[in-house]
Length: 297
Image 1 (cartoon, rainbow, N blue to C red):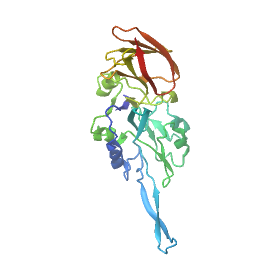
Image 2 (image 1 turned 120 degrees about the vertical axis):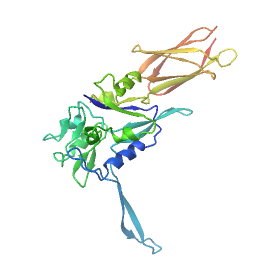
Image 3 (image 1 turned 30 degrees about the vertical axis):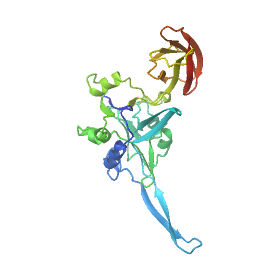
Image 4 (image 1 turned 60 degrees about the vertical axis):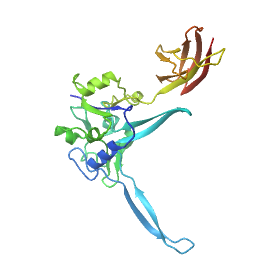
């Protein structure tokens, strides 16, 4: 059994219900032997200061809590062609976990079902675990001198339940289940929606995967070079220097969009329109690109 979380970012609206559910489950609640209680954000006031007018004003302070589940708004593109996605990030439960390698005395271990746990008894004082996570998903509890993170709700899993974030998501953007069962919902959805890890270049083999991660895209418009009219239904094909092919068809406004492209590659663009000469052009991609108006004759 290998338990996993799968996030379909095309369904996420950034409502933060997953974050709130996680806080409700863990703030003030210890589920040993998996975790001590997650600390909440704390507020208070320092002794007042007296400005020139003689009025004593309290000076506020804040001690931030932890975000074992968090969504980040990521924008790609340039106005007016901008895409925004919310990327939810818990612990990635890596099967090649840097935190496990950085830990001493068995303070981090991977369960047989793949869930990575920081042992709250053995990990006291091991602040190096915070820096070891390339995703930045391990937090330091000053009061307990303890590194802490998402446990994939191991205490609920052991009781036959599902993680709170999965239960709370109103759009069913989060899936949970056994990757080794080909008939499980998560296995089918991940195959259908082509699940990918976050930052595969880290080489951590995370069990947490995604669909709809924001990726580089190209836009443009195809027009008649003689009349200036929009051309609907023109076929646009991009072929990368690594051999990948992407296709799109212009809409009623002659616009096209090609998503999921890789940076630092040369692309060949081919535009085919009815009763027009085929046009080809080359460009180097290093981020979002607007090809502007492509004239065909």
